[in-house]
Length: 623
Image (cartoon, rainbow, N blue to C red; front, side, top):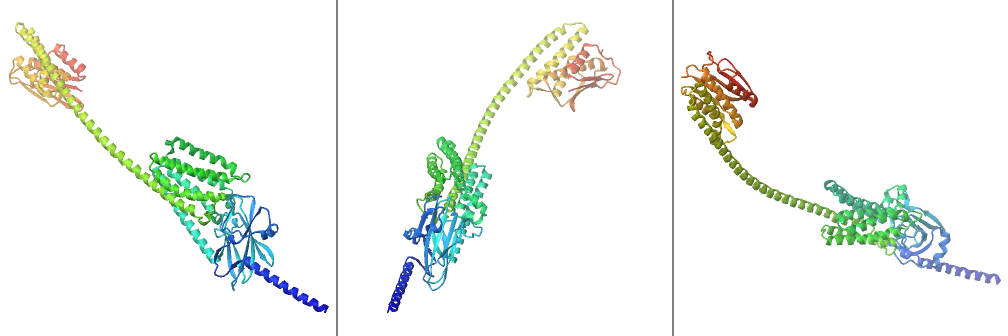
């Protein structure tokens, strides 16, 4: 009986143990997340437990603490910049389907520095992967872990997450492997598309700078480069395609990259908005640049890392940059309207990113490419502003060209009118001068004629033949001078004397004064000379012709005297000869007053030379 009694107790205990085990199993199934073949993309963080611990805690330290926790109940975890803690997540999964399932656990933050997965195997937990963020084998933007779920089995997984430089935030999703890879390719394609558009805008801005020499285009290109450099890390593109050593360095440049982007945006805004015309606004922009540069070594190093300072400065800059655009637009810079519209797109993205990084909201994980997308929109509007600027400059150029053309035409009319006025004045003055010259020559001629009249009256009273001839020579000399003034009085050009007419009339006067009317005077000339030289030539011709008539010609009747004056090269040539030059004639002494006068006039006044042959044959060269 005792043995039987013990057997009954054993059976009862065995049944009770089985009931408890079944109950515990049912309880586990009740708290585990049910997975089947139809669930290919589900969010699991809100159905998991989350524990925040110190950075050095391990699974043994925290495993018992999860029993007191409830599910997290939020789809996204975000505590901002917190470098001194680690986050643990407990995930319970149950495959209720009749087939084995293969799923991917995706962590939707590519910036997480260290992720460690612990998977249950025969009631033991084994670490599967660590430092996933900087793995050279990574081919997807977001970190993930491949999980096998046997049919009707439970699996518990622990995840440890550390982040020392950027915001500690993430979401967790359980996805079908093919679905995950397809979504990742679409995400990478969209990023490449946006980057291609932005790079084309950068190239276009550089070309505009080369074409226009406007420095604001180059600064805008620099701003876009800094923004793309920062965003390539933010969206997980740099960790995906850059080597691990670059990623490790890039991870240390969070503060410098954001600071450089603020500086580039400030430099571009100053150039585009022309803030030099607004001294206070320009001073604030300069102050932002200085403050950002100074804070980098203090708040961006590993020893003293406070990224919140840079984020707050960025937030203040966004507010001020918006205010500056509106203020400058209201004060006459119409191009600022494009700046305001383009910047308005970025304001939304920047503010969301700032509040997201500070841990106040969690929306950027839903739109990781938002900054790139709105950067494309901003770049489009700002490039429209550049085109508008070129159109404005072209219109201003055309306006200035038109104004310049009108001004030139107006000035040309003024100049032409002035020229006409001055020409009329000069003509009037010249005409008046001509009249005065003629009047002067007329008065000189009259005075010389008066002198001639006196000489002639005196000559008629002289009985001695030699004295008579001397008075005749004097009369002819004065007549030579008077004749030039007489011709100039009658000429159109009061500055030049027609030598042919002058010599012809002079020779006729000489012949008439001597009384030998049968002497034929042959004069040839096609030149005109000034009054001074004409007088000298007239005196020379008078002396030499008188000498010919008096000494060289035997039979006065039928005799000829030849006088020619022409230009030969740079010199004038005066020739005088008669048709009796070959005969032996009585020639006037070289010491006579007449020939001395001729020699003085040729050498000293005309700066020429005289040559003569036997008889009456003279050649005079002068310049």
